[in-house]
Image (cartoon, rainbow, N blue to C red):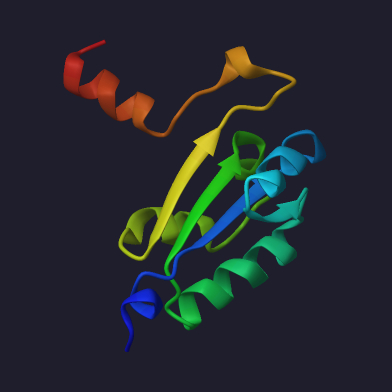
Length: 107
């Protein structure tokens, strides 16, 4: 296997129309406002084919009811998942790490 094949990482943004265009301009694949079925279809391919990926999701995507999103979060490894706030509500951004940090710091 060549070095480029072992370092091939898909960059994928999943979210609203407002953010999708910007991520597409910087070279990301995009999935715009998916329902649970479309999101799980993409995630299933990544898992089955053991693809390496950087997934950036808009926080609202957590609400679509994906069965595989939580699995990816808990597995770690080949798929790195990061969240960004919505353009329409940037002050309401809460990361999954917020709760863990509050527990650790007693906050």
